[in-house]
Image (cartoon, rainbow, N blue to C red):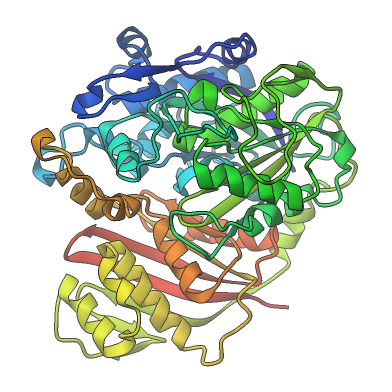
Length: 575
């Protein structure tokens, strides 16, 4: 459990949390039709900053994305009133594509492009945060995943404070990708409605400053009580119809918390056909059909890496105001699971809520927030003691580079080099998964390394408690350039959904989960460089604050077609 010190939202509806909440409560939406957005051949409806707003947000020497994040973090830190220049603060950036609108398909003409890791480092340095930043890049659940990571790191005593910023900008890159999936609505979105046509995109930055819970912490104030993540192990771009994964994380986040104390469920509510249906089934099967449902995409659109943070903040403001916000665009129920949804403002006296969210790669997350004391659900120092009180054991390891293969310390002779080496290893050692040829280079690298790793175990272990946690530096840069090559020439605009899918680097963790039926959490974090100490903090805190039994984890980076490295291990928590 961690405490909320301050929040901020910067969106087209306002530049602080209060402005944003009051705008939503008043029924104002930032969604509007846009023609020719960044040269797109199709019109879209989205929530984007006006040219005047963008100019006002600009921070000299920083890109548009970095400026947006800096504005949000600056306001939140000013309100928190803490010193962040020492080693007691961690900066966690939640984003799907960061600075991608500055990227070119030709690496020699990138202009002001900075990788997600570089963006995070530049933003942290702006505020004098001296510790290494972490980028949570887990598709739509990135913002909630970043908060869960903050809870783990602070509760285990690694830091006293965490600055969690979720941010993404609407770009031709992301819009073209969603157009290729035919998932964008030409009209304002209508979550859970029978006439819903798809999602709208949005841009925003949202920040929460957290503090580690202490024995003498104030009794009143917002806490992130508990969070949970898992994977459907079903499909890379479609949620499992049963809603099993989303239901399980809802139930784990709530634990034994008294349901009568909940004001509402803050749903993902993308207004896409399959996501809304899945969420409704998960809510019903979790026994929460009577709980009011809130969904915010009708005001902000889908703000991607910002959404999990932004929607959590608006949830806090709603509870403080005794209000359940209406679902904009909703008229008639269009899902089979029973949900308590309204297009009108409703009142509440409850002082807690639960956030649910799902994303590409099969990932799901939920988090429970409470404004009132929560008893002893998470006593201060408990997780810290647990983090120091267990040992981790590595059972097998694989290191695969563009010129070598080593399994459990044994070098294997290889003939090819670069990307041809991946095909050689697949044919020689795997050969039974034709989907391999559809993956991008990072996907092939991780797939091969994980297959070789898992094969060393012999008998297949129980899959339900195995997590997949990967780290890299270059995100999905090779796939990003491939996607850009399909959209840069507007006269030959042909974005491919299969190419776009792999521009979400966490997809590689979903590949492993689907292949082996792993339904524990899957996460991908982007770092400035391979930092064993920081990676160990994430791994140990994940074991300490979850039900993970063992983990496929390690470094997997592909910066160019012929420059890559995967160094993966299977790690067990000793009993």
